[in-house]
Length: 444
View (tube, rainbow, N blue to C red):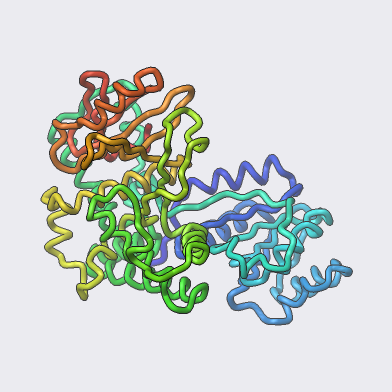
């Protein structure tokens, strides 16, 4: 069965259409296989009288060549209507440029198409700013961008047929009410299912159709292989792919930063920077940068030479962490679902927290400082809220000790707003700390 899932980005697109009235195009960018084309087609069908979708991955050379010369827009529109057997109506139709990075001239043409004013334009793309995809063209200023992510946890619950949980969680969070152990265990089991399946629409569809995690794992492996193949198109020796696949191992070592030179050796610094930029532009990963002086303007002291890397989708992270096995064994899935995750896999919870917060539009940072000559304190994540900063510490097992969080709040007491310890137990507050179950992270 084919599923079309409800996605929050739809409302952002609707806001663009209603407020913009054709004055700019909309670029929806994000990683491959997160559902960009699906949601754009759904939007085009529902919100316009007609639409034409040009998939630049498979359209003809003749269609691509239309954008080499924009002197006769009437001819271009007539040709598209004839080729796609669709009539376009001024101010009631949209033309979709799907995977526009495959036809840079079409993206450049947006400036003049928008100025013409007859139709709306929506672009989708991945690796949209990679040098080879923008070389020799002028990036249109008449382009509004929104970033799309894998399905977040609330969207996942919608896909499971559950639209009641999150309004209830919001009320509970706002009033700081505890559920009790039995309900908390059920909610934790629900979010652990999300950790295993992830937010890639193909994986979610496979789960709904089969309820078989082995089949879901096979879908996720295909997506990972697709990403690695994409990286080889940028760098044929596979070094960007090596950085990507090394993320679970690096996180499992609990080091204070990601060390790219320990993964890919003998690479010049400028070349390594290019690899990391390509990885960031792929939207398949989330960078969390170190700050040297935690304050409300976190980007002001961002240190881009020190960072941690997380996989953009936690479902893919689980599969990638056990890539050497033919199938991510059911035993692991059973342990995750039953809350018997080994302590050395706690980084999967960190990846989940990053995914949830990034999909909500948060830019994340972390902070370390010396404890003694051999040890450091570390705050997992920092958020800016109003005039204060909010530190988060993530605990997948023992939560009674949180020395780094305590010392940080003492060190920067005047800058601290809410302080959170994210864990697997019920919601509670104690000593100015909110102990937050991981399924509520998106409510911060």
